[in-house]
Amino acid sequence: MSTPDAPHYPWMDLLRTVNRAVHERHERTLVSYPPGSIGHQQVTAQCPPDWLGAEGAAEAEIVRHEERLGMRLPPSYREFLQVTNGWDEETRSSLRLLPIAEVGWTRDVDPGLAETWGPKLGLPDIPDEDYFRYGAGQDPIHIRDEYVPGTLYIAEYLEGQVYLLNPHIVTPDGEWEAWTFATWYPGAYRFRSFWDLMTKDVFREFRP
Image (cartoon, rainbow, N blue to C red; front, side, top):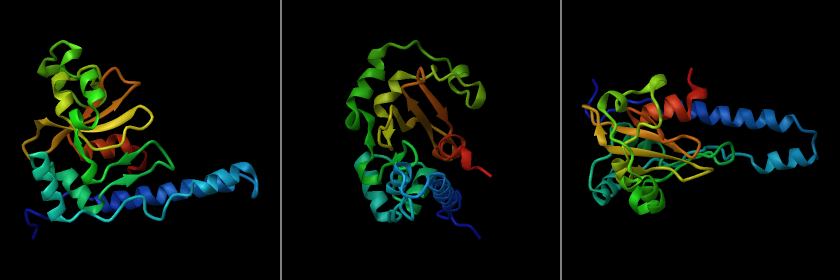
């Protein structure tokens, strides 16, 4: 019988799949260069660690940082942290999800982003029928700038891209809206939850 604290998201299965695929890709790239060549040496130097994640965060550690942030984290993100307290794929792509100790509000972690895209930007009001549209029909220009400073900054800003969680939009089961924010978008692509962000965007190539 499941309990309220039982995992609802198969993070370990997904992350093992991603971890294995990253290593297989690295091996294919490595063998495509002649041994001793510059390319072979460069790829060898970029060999990913055995596990791209980290030890999971203990419940007490998560609670301590929830107290620091002033609110309980959304379920799918909480469960992710319990499996791996951060994720680092810099050897493969521009992705580094921060450990919980480095997570903070955008206004504190990246005040430049908060100011540039915050309320001072003066974007027009976005009606609900446009804002609450996810998936293929979504227009990334439809973000609400008043939300930006108070989003949770969960990834390192790499190559013009960062991932944010938005506590201003919460589903009935406690999930926060999640954003892919990038310089090549006229705004952000939004997802209903951190799980959706990871499976439909960040790790979409690894979906079965």
